[in-house]
Amino acid sequence: MQIINNCHLKGSRLATVTTVDELNLLIAYSRSKGAGIWLDGNDIKNEGKWIWSNNNTPIHPTYWHHGEPNGKRTENCLMISGSGDSWKWFDDSCKRSHYYVCQKNMQNLSEKQCLGLKDLLDELIKCKQHCKKP
Ligand SMILES: [Ca+2]
Ligand SMILES: [Ca+2]
Image 1 (cartoon, rainbow, N blue to C red):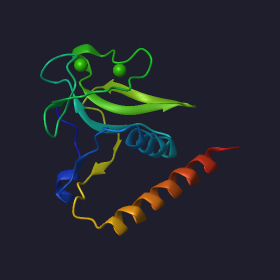
Image 2: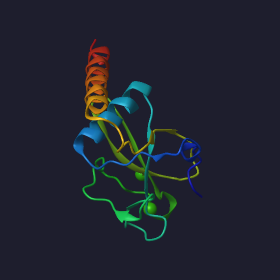
Image 3: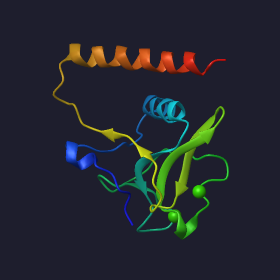
């Protein structure tokens, strides 16, 4: 029933969303693929009680798309999806396959490395936004 992913092979896990910056980054990636991506959340154990799988903590806040979640017991895995300017969270069947993003804790990075990564991500988001303009 679980999503097939290889994040664990790289010592990482499916992406979680704990800040709006993370949400926007993952939406930018999803949009760039023109396709949905799996996140780490599920409500497999208790219908409607969404948790992050990696640490079993309740998901808060949530960023559901209008009308979602709507799959009750048939859709227990969390993804980002959408179209046009409207990209948010959906529940979907865990048996389906989608792109996914792995997330790795990097608490041992130096401040310089962190700033370098931040600059890189800022540039990536700018680039993606620019690319999407007609
Ligand atoms: Ca469900
Ligand atoms: Ca749904």
